[in-house]
Image (cartoon, rainbow, N blue to C red; front, top):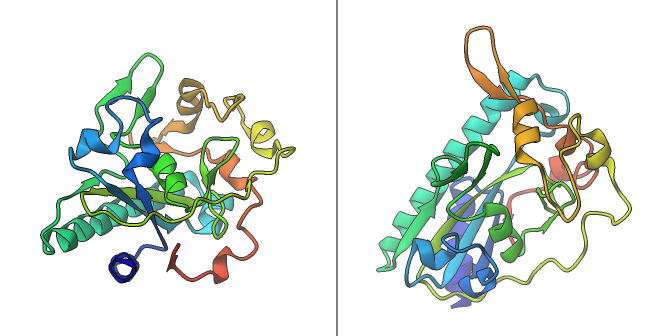
Length: 236
């Protein structure tokens, strides 16, 4: 079974993932109703989570148009990785469902501008040992900090989960992300006021396109910046 787990990770990495982690569906017992692996696949046993890095320069210096363009590319590539992984598992007689890396999803509150994906990829990634949630609620990985995007595949394949990251990657006394937020949207206990965040982040361009421009809380996080440019993709 360990060989199968390694082969699955190698497949995802070969398709472009930078990190791959494995979580058991049992680690999602605290997820909200309708957002658990078994709500997606009744016989779910495992969630495979893949991450792709966001270029540091795009986050730190790039204009909002470049940031939006890279996000769009990453969502597409992650969805494609998840699709190919699902087909790869299906060819072995297994059930597998890729969860969209971003849109679409059912759960949306228009008044609060708050939504939940069918499965929380950041919580799935934490359950798969890829990192820990930071103060601003984004996943922090040891390799790339919070400059990653994520996707998940739910499957009935029973695999040994990866160990959780025990190290607290977000320093307890660090409040750089809190102080950097232009609208003070980051509260206590990893809670973010989505209405405040989205109202500020969404920018309408002269031609009519709408982009997400703000990423201040990503910029200031020091974790992973120093060595992420030299880190090769690997399974965790």
